[in-house]
Amino acid sequence: MHTDFEVTKNEFQRQYETKINDDLLAVEFSEHDRKVFLTKLTIPEKYLNSDIQNLFISKVLDSFVDTRFKVMPTSPEVAKFFRKNRLKYKGLLPAGITI
Image (cartoon, rainbow, N blue to C red; front, side, top):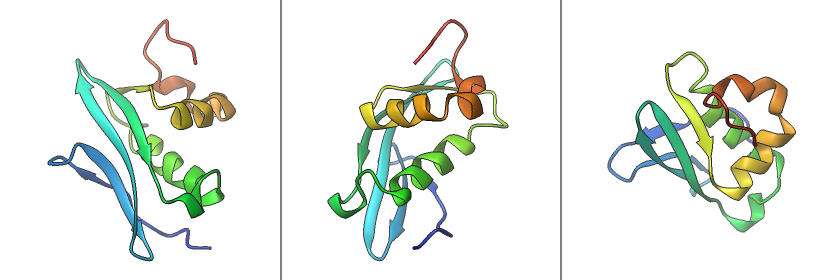
């Protein structure tokens, strides 16, 4: 399995993305008041609900750990991942928000 990929922030397309074997994995975002809304996950069908999908989401979330940004996982897939990994990422949620 390909696990050593890098996630980059594409400001122009407003998404975090990576390429694995010429396949694009991306999560769209918008930023408001030091909050990042992760709005839509787009990944090839062969990676759906896989370790690759989880690793991609994990790498995106990890990029916010040492920032002043809070994360609002509004994409259903990202919210589901967030719930499963609540203890690791609960510090990224804005105050008063539960997933």
